[in-house]
Image: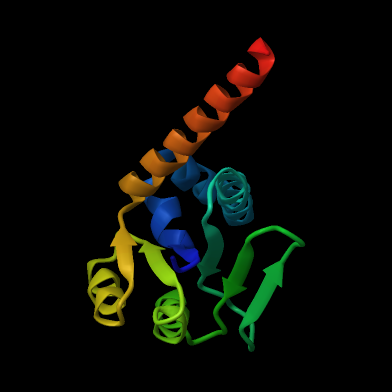
Length: 145
């Protein structure tokens, strides 16, 4: 079985989840940090390795990751998050089971043509909620012992 990677199109998700869209309208960095925290918890509760990609503004692409945390990429100025996502899928789809979370229809088609899978923002939310419920059930079983 191949290791699993979930690449998240950050702004696509932020603008589809109402609470994050509201945060983004007030302060974009806060919405990005909230999404990052949600995804870090999701990674901790599942077998997914999470990669979060945002459109950037700097002159070079950048990556930040924490020990045992998610990887976060920012595209460079003039480059889109989509192009970073496409390069990652093209590079890793043969070695890993790669899924991209986005509501961008063209991006979904491109990812699938490279051999990756896709999920919508709604499906991502449902997967996160299911993982949270699973964790609560495991904790409840431990409490009963």
